[in-house]
Image (cartoon, rainbow, N blue to C red):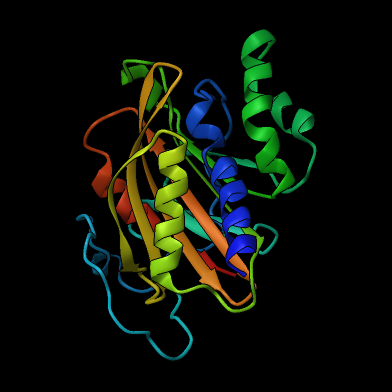
Length: 247
């Protein structure tokens, strides 16, 4: 069981980091579509950084997380999860499986188009969510667009213990050259538990600042990865990550 889980997590980590290592900053798509109207009271969602570790297990079905004011929820049952991102972020529908057709709307050509295909093709195969703050590239020292990807894969029907999962994630990220600054269990806005990992990762001369949320359900593990090369994004990343909802 441990060996199977270890291999599964390693492949998921490589996939989750796909757009942290590739720059798809210049993709020009429509604004992220809203798949859900705001629910509940937006003020109930904090914009501060969530770093505490939750204890115990919340019983019952997690409640539906509210969408913070100024955000849209992206994703669908085809993705297996949804997450809320700022309304001015852009998104691609990667569930249709035809990346060439999807990128026709981007206006990219030549090397930029090929780079986008390389970065996004693994995510298409896994029906991932992809969204980006395209405007962030203009103020990035490396022209790197702050971005998010999220996807789900099958996992053992009985999720492994949280401590073992964290140990595996830490070890495999470190093997890829990442430096872990935080790793622990947190609560999502829905009340469901998740593993949150904050790290830096050198890639092609760029120091990527990443945050990952791992959400487990029987037979299913979903990862949301947020990547940037800019300082001061942690509070936003945590606000986005906490809206993750499995469906």
